[in-house]
Image (cartoon, rainbow, N blue to C red; front, top):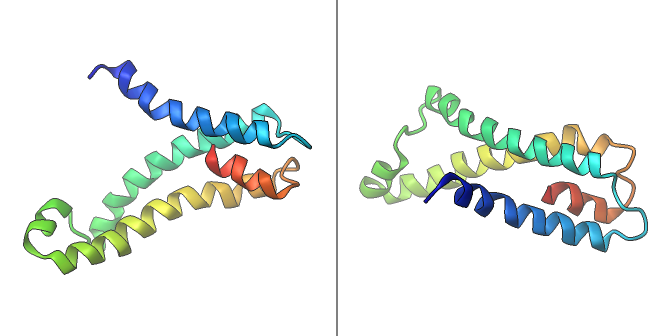
Length: 118
């Protein structure tokens, strides 16, 4: 698979949801610059999420979850729920909470869906 195929598979669903929710937000649509900011924060949160696994290893989390899946099923479940779930959701939530919720344009309930999807 070439790089453009991979990038389009990553970007296309996000662009679809952003366009759909932007269309649904007819009363007070969000500024496109703020949506782009939220999208860039989302990309950054992916990077932070990946780097957080290195920090989790310092605290004893498994460096190889696939080996854990083969040897210890309950340990793998705990790893998925306690490490993967917490790290990835926290990495996505923090930019939304620290930046997007404080934007002046965030003034309707649907805005949460718009920014969170970006």
